[in-house]
Length: 574
Image (tube, rainbow, N blue to C red; front, side, top):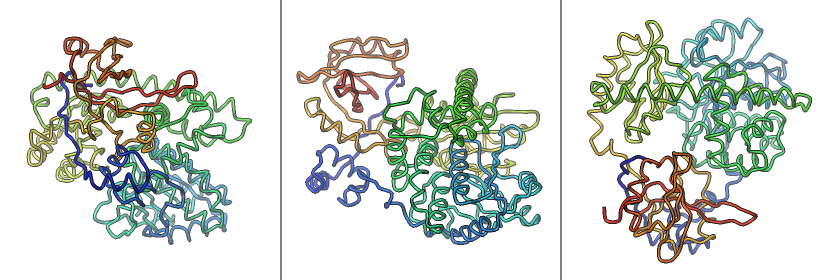
């Protein structure tokens, strides 16, 4: 929570449509309003959103080149040809690799995998990897979560007589790589209805089609929980198929049982026996899995998730603990680098006064620059590019705000870059280190054309006013039914006016604030995360505050109670 609160933007809603939806589905008016604000005023669409099932997944054969890919994979399995899965070193890439390898092995395939190491191999599908796999006797390479901009690697595969199937979800270039098949819903000629799958979602569609072709549809549910981890970690919009994958996967992760590798990871994260939600994936499981690729080798995470035999329980436990240790190292590296990056922004006007923050440091750990870029966006509400300078090259990670297309900006700066790719909100690049200042000027010139002062102002979307008297267990349960929350389906935020602090605020671990709030005679416990610096302000204005909050259902001694998570507070009438 920033020291100076964001501007509150009330989200509009068609009240008549919300009333009709509430009546049609028999749900609370508050929940109906939230559904309408998310574009789900049609009762059938809203019902599918609230109660997703596997049958809601689209026909995978609608994806361009899927038929070609399935024919070739089934031929490889029948001929006992060696198949290699080429993944990526983040959670999306690792879960894609694990899921597809397991599926192909269950169908009788001879399968190996290769995931590049960030510092040794660089990002994405490279010609050298194709050469290495061909030398190992691989006849068919399937990429997951990478490859869409790897024309050079595709040409090398063709020269070596290796068939290449690319599955990816990143933005393609105008010309697709010359592979045997390119499966990506973002292809301009692809009529697939859901364009926002994660890399693991695209890989799941391949698995779905393979299971169907082999008459093994019953295998599909077993892959959903791994796909859910990658989907939630990659912060794709949690609507459409992503919601089906995420919601069903979280239910399966909660229920179990799990193979020994996943079970060990959940245990080290302290999640055994708990109801697992998107927070647990995003802030507990995913950081540990990501830490492998960031700090050492992604093979640690891959081996852990592939571990199935109970005789490997001891090894799996050690791998999970190793991931935990790598995550601690990542946190330490991140804290040091973030502090240095903030100092640069706050002390160098050529950097801090710009619409886009472009910061660089010698030898900054490439595995952490993406997280630091995200933290800079959170701190300054501006797009950020963080560059690690190593000798004469700079490797960068970019994060953006909703109103700025980062990938589009990089495309306009392409003449300065050695390589780049990604999405509107997150991208990566490399360039000659001597051209960093040119990049800073060029990308800010793009920003100055498209961003105004209002775009750089932090904003908080308010779904609607909700008085304390209207908060019931049923309302809280109805709001919780919209979970999992994340990109494309944000956690609902409500506003209550004229609220009084009747207990507190008290500091918690010197970072957070706990308090009790009262409005019209009703009292709720509340917590404001990372808001300790606002203690004195809230103490001064505790008699009359407007609060923005989310509803949380917590349990204690078998009882369920509602608590408020505070997104912002300000004095009433300010």
